[in-house]
Image 1 (cartoon, rainbow, N blue to C red):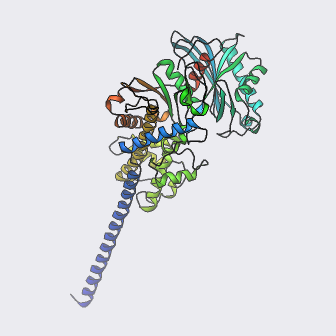
Image 2: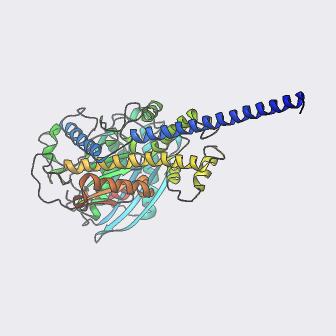
Length: 497
């Protein structure tokens, strides 16, 4: 071989080595970037950890905040609002009652007939609220509602006898009696300025009278209290209600002598339903991550509703998106799709649930969601598994924290199986306890439900957990409100609490 041949061979060898070196470097870089994604996953999992010991700390913090909220207004992140509901349905109610559920862009009217311990019939109509009525005057809004209800009542009954109405009004209200309360502020896009501070039940009654309809509000409630009423109607061992859906809240039956901020408060039953507004609960024991802080910074209610932002459906998908976006920025697991993951709330909680519940061998549903909703094509199987794990961590933390909140209520009531009730009274054997529960996150997401039930056992122990039943209810804001109208109407059967 001549000198030229040797030179060519040497050049080829050098080029081959250079190419090999580049390939090795790329593989090493790819492995490093993958390790970074895995490290971010591990850090996130550790930050969201909820071992039983930590959950019990959350339970105790919830009880402390409940006591503080009952002692004084503003004494706790938990508002512990009085509802003045001192009697709940027992199954003995009879007759025909109506309900209005107003809390968003639509409102519902319901006709509920009860008798012989069951809801005989329940019919409803749902109507959109024209946008102009969300920004006009309170008289215009309630005149629209009253005329729609009048049309519904006349179609259903056509009789002129007076009827009781349960009014579910899902906006912040300062309750002054079971059938009255003043609006604190609007949410959900409503901005009717002349309504703030007014008694919304009285405003609706005036509109009903003006329409010629012989119907009067006998119970002004929120959806959580309606859920408790419906649960109690079916089972008198029901002592609390929890909603875990797009948002979250809880209420329970409290002894009136434990409501320190209203000393001297008297009720026929010795008890009253307290609306906790538990979405605003906060404690240093809650496992907060940098992603939760980023989420809070995105929202209009920054530094509020901390518990809700960890456990409710409107936020879970967004937490997962924030984690995936950081992975995209700091690794190559999603190729060039970092920009597609930068848009807030593009990963909804229903999509998160579908990702977590995909049990196909190649995670085909995960691939479809990534392609169609997040515009991330051609993901590898190990990347899809990474996405599933992120969604699992978010789901598991939310469910287990929700379980801790429920046990906090039970501990306050002396029904969690621990030695002494928070009131200081000694306890006997655990009594059967029912918690009514409603909301799409619990009802429609089996993995979430399994994690929540599992955590209840871990916190309380199997023996006590067997005495606690979570009973799914449907339409507490409608049927539950009608049942409360029955209990608190002038010709009511005596309810219990």
